[in-house]
Length: 72
Image 1 (tube, rainbow, N blue to C red):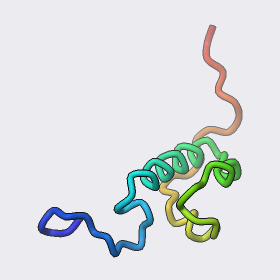
Image 2 (tube, rainbow, N blue to C red; image 1 turned 90 degrees about the vertical axis):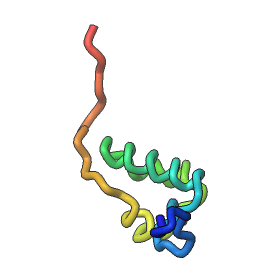
Image 3 (tube, rainbow, N blue to C red; image 1 turned 45 degrees about the horizontal axis):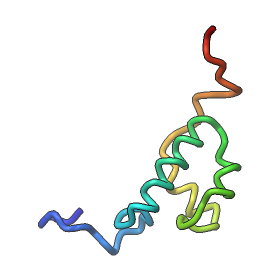
Image 4 (cartoon, helix red, strand yellow; image 1 turned 30 degrees about the vertical axis):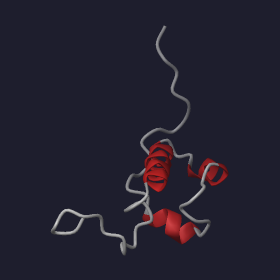
């Protein structure tokens, strides 16, 4: 965001001014938490195909290793 509260369109982050890419960034980080970034390439539409560009969008390290099985 700019000081006058408008959207910064010259940001180096692809999700800065695109709702679609913002959703992809959220999904990417969810997948990163579950150590499933490799599957993101089949869903990715706008964040680019360069692994370095995608890696810059990841904010989290995996916290789940394996399948989560609900109780009961």
